[in-house]
Image 1 (cartoon, rainbow, N blue to C red):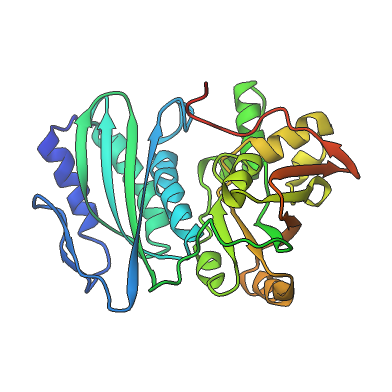
Image 2 (tube, rainbow, N blue to C red; image 1 turned 60 degrees about the vertical axis):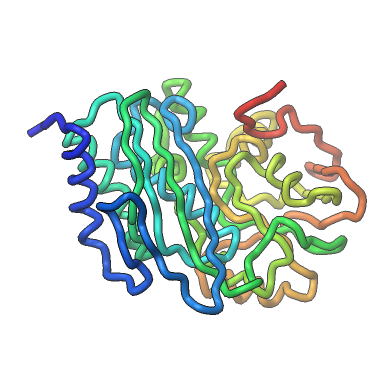
Amino acid sequence: MVVGLNENQLIESIARRAARDIPDSGLILGIGDDAAIIRTAAGYDLVTCTDTLVSGVHFPENTSAYDIGWKSLAVNLSDLAAMGANPRYTQLALTLPHARSDWLEAFLDGWYALAQQFKVRLIGGDTTRGPLSITVQAMGEVPADQALLRTGAQAGDLVVVSGELGGAALALECLQAGKQVAADLLQRLKRPQPRLDLGVALIGIATSAIDLSDGLNLDLERLLGQQGARIELDKLPLPAALKKIPEAWRWPLAISGGDDYELLFTIPVVAQVQLQTLAVELSLPLTVIGTVLPEPGLKLFAAGAAYQPTSSGYLHFEN
């Protein structure tokens, strides 16, 4: 039965689900007061990140509440993965046009389906009325001074990406065109899997790292800063469906489509054996796609010829 909720009932419903979380010795006070209290472990740094998802911008307006719940948590956990952090806590700010019990329960089902994989606790947040948007703050721990950073890549390092690229962008393209979408591509778009185990394992191996949310082209520029890279597009790991379409559409989706939530990182050449071992241990493709260059500029090549991208990637604000 669908029930309309007032603000107190909305918060109480969320608090009841949060009460089922696995006990955590670091959580001193959770939902119910003006703020939460957590105690960090000695020898660890606290890593925090925040992401906002807006209906019609970050997900289609007809997306199910379950998938919104999953994805709103996943994109934040992906940021923690890029830092090598082990996730611990989250805060959730919900802006809803209407507070309905059925929507909220489905949202929390999706949220907790992912949260329980990594034992992440929900410890607070906020609720308000307005156009549908979800803001999440995630917190994790990493050994002191060991966090993976975007800075640190050296000329000659190898550029590596996890998983496959372009599947989510292809799924969104098909949905917007009213075409049928394969189930595995829809999964990449609606329920990305944050690479937390990989992020933790890359500490001491990777020289820099970033999560891929806005497209390889743009995120690689963010990772490299004042350096450059040569990237071989033919080496990009792509889903089978993307390999079947013409290159004129394939490369823009693969490098500029965004929503991949894979990890992009650099490693010294001498770490290639460790990389191969890690790929086997995690059952996750880890593909070398290029090399860091000392001079600025991203050089893309397809079949040996220079390739000029038509889009840099996804930006919320463009001049």
